[in-house]
Image 1 (cartoon, rainbow, N blue to C red):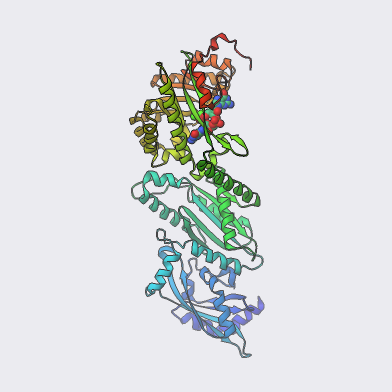
Image 2 (cartoon, rainbow, N blue to C red; image 1 turned 180 degrees about the horizontal axis):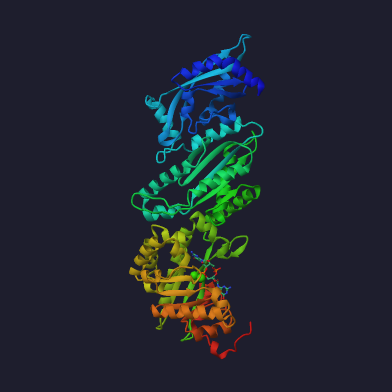
Length: 577
Ligand code: C2E
Ligand code: CA
Ligand code: CA
């Protein structure tokens, strides 16, 4: 402190007054060693440039707002070493506040011939930037948000890592807007673009002067913070960023859009780190936040990397499975209680994994959903199920043709091509559309309400029937039943479990049956495992049921035989289980 103080005092009493008189921003940098500098003085004009007016005195690598100067430490080194004036340009601020400054750094040589100080002077060149500079700007900035892009982010990271003193680190925050694709698909791309720009501005507004914001592409933003002492500091920043999502976003045509964001945090712990690795770590942490239910912050740790490698392997294997026909459809019969016969099937996908054998959907559908692979997989299931149902219809001699129920996930429902996809499947198979039931869960409906209304209406107009899956678990208002063209309610298995034992479950099932019948809907119970449950369901007036009690899901060829089977449950004694 004292040496630094002295030299500043020594140098600057006159010099400072001189600098303060300058209309241009000017500063003094002390030379401590070959690549080591400290910020010694900023004149009034320079201080006015800084957002917070904070006078950046101290270790150059920590306090150098405008942060961009960090990248020019090399220029300072050259000026000091070669004792000559070195010039460079700097971007001050971002977005609309962006200014371009031309900076000249000149050495001050002491009596003993050594350079202990550098004097920097800046003047604004924002308006007379050359076309070339503009082009350079474009390659390093994102046109939509005017934010620096990935190229520039990598440069910052490189400089920040290289310039960090031993006890300080570089933190990286990566943010991905949750369900942005759905917003984009339902509100249109223009609104999506507008939304991204608004989000970027709001995030920018909670950053400190030395944090730097960039757009990684799509709906992903990144924030570099340097001079960090501990990961908690970066998490605190991530929290502030997350808090901007607490309030709705307003767009020109949509007054209120509520969004969430999944945020990943990673730290570099030293010179050996590379920008690419830091970015990958933060990305992995962000994915982990998504995986754990979104709208949360996750800090990178090694176990995440292992899991993400595993996810990547599953994703690759799923693509392979699609190409090589490793998926199968199993069918579970749907039994009509009153007529005691099979009236249709639910199609349930399986993955015939070359090593692990027949894999249930819960093991791979979440990854398929996240990666969007559910769209082609679901399209394949749909085509397969329609073809199977058409074969059954052709084989049936008289009697009512069998229906087939196919599940639609959230991603499929919002897929812009879904209505055409269903039409194609039905037409290709030559299936009567009224034999196809598409099942959508209540939660998916609630989360994509407007889009769901449009899609389900188009499907219903085609003659396809709609079922609400897992009914009763969505904690929804029931109002949507009036708006949507629904034909079937499937009571969730969790309410069936307690039937015959838990009076509350009976009450819920009874209420659902009453409601469905009042609305003219068919009620199906799923997950029936015991005759006692079956008995209770019959007494409560439920129409249809499926479950292990009748049959497990099985390949199409096998399940066909069940059609001729009459389920004479009334002859059986109720099981005690
Ligand atoms: P879901 O639509 O609710 O399907 C019913 C699940 O309950 C099936 O599990 C079925 O095998 C199981 N199940 C049927 N009866 C019983 C029973 O008596 N007891 C018990 N414990 N379980 C029973 P599965 O086949 O493992 O499918 C799980 C979920 O995966 C499905 O739940 C559905 O949400 C999803 N899924 C399956 N196939 C597809 C598909 O092709 N596309 C999409 N988008 N989702 C699918
Ligand atoms: Ca289902
Ligand atoms: Ca279900």
